[in-house]
Image (cartoon, rainbow over all chains, first blue to last red; front, side, top):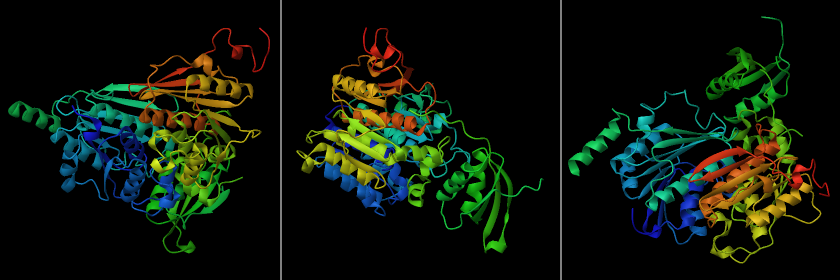
Length: 235
Length: 91
Length: 233
């Protein structure tokens, strides 16, 4: 990817615990345009980990508050804040408008939609998540690395993976993860391969242990096969 | 079942999730291992969420039943405090 | 003192973490953390200390806001030139009205220190001061897009023993945010009593990947002499 950072656009899905630090990292580094998508309002229990919002923002729409905060601190960045769900009818346009996608969402439906859309649009995707004391990172390079569906053949069954609402989250760990996701997006925008490309990096904040799980394209992954097929035909 | 009675009782009907489970967890932390906490819950999400979270956190759900005498839509749960969590040290 | 309803609501998501009981949250509330050094990781670190419920945060920072300060988290063009410590305290208080965030005053008695030196020399001096006062501390070193967080419980190998040179790269805002948040996390776990052994450790972030190792005393270091402040050879 050539060109300077100020000519680039980044899409950040979710403006909360992960998306806030990721968006701030991109803005502070000087990305040209930041597209933020969040459908929620600011709630009290968000405030232990979401740096785009303070007590004065309680009840406010997150997209609007996030956009206002980033614009105040970084007036040189074009901020396009969407108060909407990242959903099938809008995903393709949002992803196509960006040079890199940061999936900072908190549910598997959105993660899989972001994955599939980024792959078909050939956009690199940084995926990250935090759960209790652990953080995980994965970067998908369409046509080059495996994707989220290579890792999970299907979304985990309802009720088997605790949602953020049920399981605990530690603010500082989300900040750590979100900042690293922003840094990874900046590496991708600079044309580098990315530290999490082709491998899941999992960090346990209590033990301090890091696991690296290589992620190869899974034969039979429907999304990766579609990308490979099109690449061969189209050249 | 032995004739044990709850050591403590908490009414969580005026709270919404996740505060319902948080308060139940704090109340469990204040009674000894093996003691019973009686919890009053609203039907719906609290009734599903609190006993399940308690079990995941290492406590036993001894009872879960409707308690209409306490009010419409009220449920009662008896939660037996599990082993104390191993704590770290001071700085 | 037990948690009140406002605290339970505010800290709900961390109060349901494994090993995080009411006592852990009360220890955070009772902590008085001095944040010093003027480095780029300071503002993100302060944010997460406040957000987690550290009861008192004293910011030791005499400098004015310069462009790029705060890792791009708090200060817009309108804040440049204003006293940075005071502006950071306002940001922390806005994050959590249940905590006290103020300027550090000489004579104050913190219970722990978060060291965010603008250079490693600055960090070394502040860390040594904390060690001699028998205060647990965590040091945030920013190095390019990464850096390291070094955790020093009371009596542990000191920061100077634990440190090794990094790339020597200019700090970036994304690196500062990652290391600041990580250092805050380490101090929160330490103060709350939730850290696992070995608590004395250094977590280095290189190419986006964390690597943790226990710290060890270097022979001949003053921290090796069996106690802080032992004078003589």
